[in-house]
Length: 288
Image 1: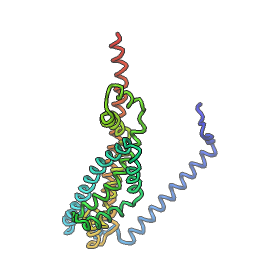
Image 2 (image 1 turned 90 degrees about the vertical axis):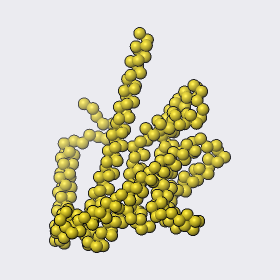
Image 3 (image 1 turned 180 degrees about the vertical axis):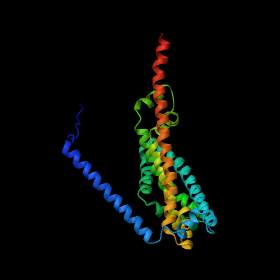
């Protein structure tokens, strides 16, 4: 029998109490859910007038509503795509700069990273929206959102990539230097690909954050998904239904990205295990 070294295994009475507690908690949650459903039904939130524009193609508001929400979703994905691209590129450059910077100017790189990390993302969005026209850069509103999201998320990605580089064994770089590779080649060809593989789940999780943060675009009147939903709510008067639908769409997209991270990590792990098993076999065959 294996015994836990961290805590004492529960006895029969403790297991029975845990079952009772779980059952009571489940009943309480079920009762709370039923009460919420009852209150919503009493308030008329399950009527056709509330749900018809979302689910009935024959409803007069169905086509205009879905057209409005579809354009908002496209705007959200467009802003998120540009923000993710710029954040990855600039974040990688910042990470490499911080790792390879000389001591006399490393403080400037660290200062920029810490400044942007400590600033709320909505402040960066407002700053880009208000400050850029003052200096003569009158950009479309989408780019104010992209610049704000990029400024915040690029430094987060920079820290993720730097942590991935620092986690690698020093023998990786020493072996590369031993075969005559220069410092830049070691970083780009040896360390950076391994750091991305090691930190891929964290990177994709941060990309999910970027996608969710595009909803802050409504603060500068960018017609993204949430802002288009609020416009529809003002005309249809069904906030619960539309906010539930918007949340569901975000959950589906973010869940897909999360599963992509898990799938990619498993594929990479399987590839590393296959390479590790093939090396001894090839060495044995060469020895024979």
